[in-house]
Image 1 (cartoon, rainbow, N blue to C red):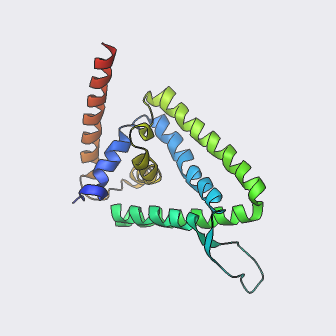
Image 2: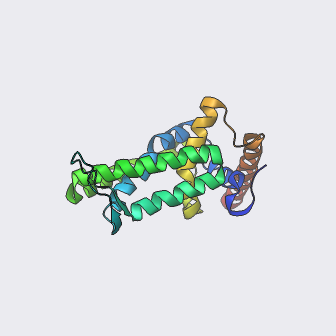
Length: 199
């Protein structure tokens, strides 16, 4: 049984899915959404720290600190677990692995190189996604209509797409059929609005 309100996964997934129905566009997002999340965490590494982890006895310093990057990953992880315990737990692990990896990379690279790497990666990933929408989806990205929802759902959306395609995973029975119906209804409504504007 699905949740209602803020944690209504069907509604969120259908909203995002309505903007990502073209297989090529979905594949582009699968490739580039998590790298956007990862490189954003690299930049967040240079926010004020609340706590720094001590060096390990071997003398190796990972540079891990509890900062806004950690909080950013934590918020995403909590939301995903509340959306769906099983897939959400996997997504939460991925969020924290990204935080650890991004922290280590940023620490090793230093600020001067980190922001250049992040800028290049973000520009490339975002440009690829906009091309996916413009050339293949032929619809503006979801962030145009709901910025917060699009940013929050994007990593979880592509993970669920992979789990569904690879293992026929559903958060609960009937989830995908219900979402598909909602997506088709939303797309018809959007096409109707587009026809009215053009007439």
